[in-house]
Image (cartoon, rainbow, N blue to C red; front, side, top):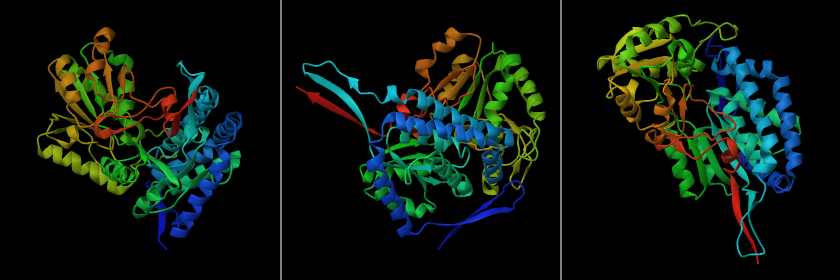
Length: 452
C-alpha cells in the first residue's frame, strides 16, 4: 500500500506518514457518504445551522493548534495561519446567519395556484483542494455545501494531509453525523474512479489549469457538474493619481501575502509612467523591510515556499524572463524552499513573468504610457480571476468595469475572497462561483414546483 509523507518545508523534517486508502476503503467512504446523505438532507436547516455555529466556535477555540499545523505543513507565517483559521470561523457564521434565507423556496407568480423553486441538495460532492490555504479553501466550500444538505468527500493536497484529517475531526467533534464530511487519502490516479462512481454527484476543484482540464473532462464525460477555480495572473494597475502613501502597504501585501502563493495575488504591477519611478522606489523600500525567517516567529512576514520544487519552478520562470530581457531590480536569491522577496522590471508580454502564473514572492513591474495602455496590458492574459486598480479617480475607475473581463474588479483594495461576495474566474481561471448565495446554491437541484 502506498504512503504519503508530510514534511516541514522550513526545516525539512518529516512530520508524519499516512497510508493511502485502498480501493475497498474508498468504496466504504463513498457508501458512508451516501447513507448519511439520506438522513442529512431531511435534517432541518435550523439543526444544520446549530452544528455550523458549533463548528465556528470550535475553530476559534483551537485556532492556535490548527494554525501551527498549517505552518508546519506548508510554511505559512504563523500570524497568517491564525488569520486563516479566524476567516474560516467567519464563513461558518455567515452561512449560519443566511442559510435559511438563501435556501428558502422562491415563489414565482404564474397562473398556477402555487409555483416556486425548491432548492434540494444533490448528494455527495467531491472537493479537490490545494495546499496554499489548506483550511480556508476547504471551509469556503464545505460550510455552504453541507448546510445546503449535501455530504462531502475531501481529496486534499498530499503535503497538507494532516490539515485534511484535522478538518474532518473538527466536523465530527462539532457533532456532524459520521460520513457527513470525510477525507480520502489517495493519489491522483484514483480520482477518476471516485468521480465516475455514481454516488458522487458533482466535483469542485481549486488548482492548476492542467488539473482543471483533466477534472472537467472526467466530470463532463460522466455528466456531472463541476466548479473550477484555476488560478490567476492578476494585474495591479497603478494610475498616475494613485495615493501611494495610503495604499502602498496594500499593494505590497497583495503580492507578498503567503509568500506570493495565492491565486488572487497581484502577479503583474502595471504602472503609468508618470508615477513609475516613484512607485518603484517606494515599493522597493517596503519590500526590503519585510522580515524573512522562521514561520513560527510572530514577527516573520515571509518564511518559505511550500516545497522545494515550487521554488525551483519560480526560479525557472524568472530566469527565462531574464534571458528575454527582464531585469532584476531587487532580490532573487533562492535556496531550497526559501525565495527572497523579488522585484523584476522591464517585463514584456513574451515573458513567463507576464503571461504565466508565478506562485512565489516575485513582483513583475510593467511600465505603461497611459491609463488606456494599463487596461490593455491588464487584459492581455489568458487568465481571468481578478484585477485591482489604484486611483483617486473613482468615476474613471467605474468606467472600466465593462472592460475588465475577470471574475472580480477591486478598486483601491487587493483582490480577496469575502463570504458576502461571489468568488470565481473567467477564461482559463475556471468557471462557477463560490461564497455568497451563489456558493450555497452551487450544488443544489433548483427544482421547479407547479401546483395547478
